[in-house]
Amino acid sequence: MACRISELVLGCRDPEVLARFWCEVLDFVVLDRMDDGSMEIGPREGFGGPQPTIILSRRDEPEKGKSRLHIDVNATDRDQDAELERLLKLGARPADIGQTGQEQWHVLADPEGNEFCLLKARLNPL
Image (cartoon, rainbow, N blue to C red; front, side, top):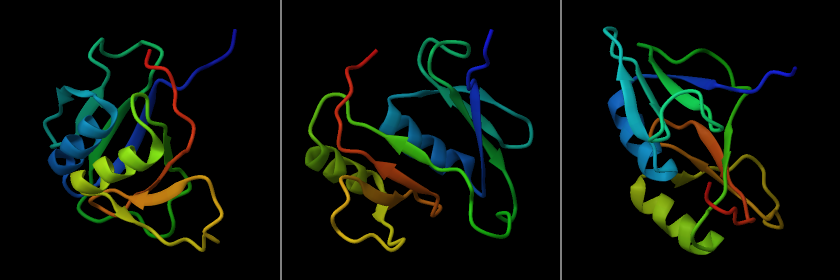
């Protein structure tokens, strides 16, 4: 038997802000609020399904250095341009990591500057 990813953990200053952002981006809901201000968000079905949950772990200061993990997202109900417009309206902003302009994805940053990519392919919703 193999493992699968069940949770992703993202250190952040303001879990509430990032929960609102990522819940809108991914159509997730808040599943749990911890005493330290951390939050777990995930699919409406809750923990344990095919999609991992995201734990927004409250930290006073972000860890030093570049993050080694980022999230890639694919639109499920619109094309890439329409999804890019939606993400920018939600508070994402373009991030320059040295792209050539020929990529088929957009590199963005969430409201706390965590980089993520909007890929071109459209996926069928689960």
